[in-house]
Length: 224
Image 1 (spheres, rainbow, N blue to C red):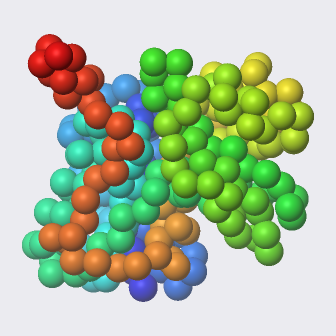
Image 2 (spheres, rainbow, N blue to C red):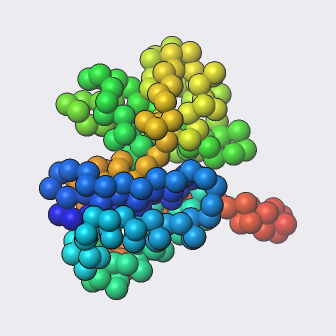
């Protein structure tokens, strides 16, 4: 299945093209430009360089959250628009699960700790165990303080993945920090996670935020 994948849940943005169980191409940027400026041009240039017309696509996958509210909205909106125009299905995957797929380089049985900076002294987090070359989920996606995460993990050896990995590193006693090109979230992980995930209509694709945005929190506080 020829799949275009998007990852825009954090500062970095990436797009990937995959098919036949292989990564065919990927474009990655981590320069701080807004995803509304970069995401579609990256995809268009990548498809052009691969000689692929967008009408050949069979699926568009996206990291639907958790993550940056603006980044997640942009990725989901671009995906919905493309799938609606092309009349093809979509697949929204957990940002954290997609990150876990980037940890398949690790030894069998490794504990993967996926973490995104959620601010307010918290990270978005999920834990996975690597079994037979695939990440197996150990807990749901959650917003959790770094102190609580450290308490839950204890002295276990964990491989940290995601843009929140550095924030967690000094608090987790058995933490292993891979180099940035292996730990930062990317569309390649989205493509891998989408292979076994349900495919839905673009009308059914929804973002997942885990908690309220700052504007929603402030509005709720002002009502009290």
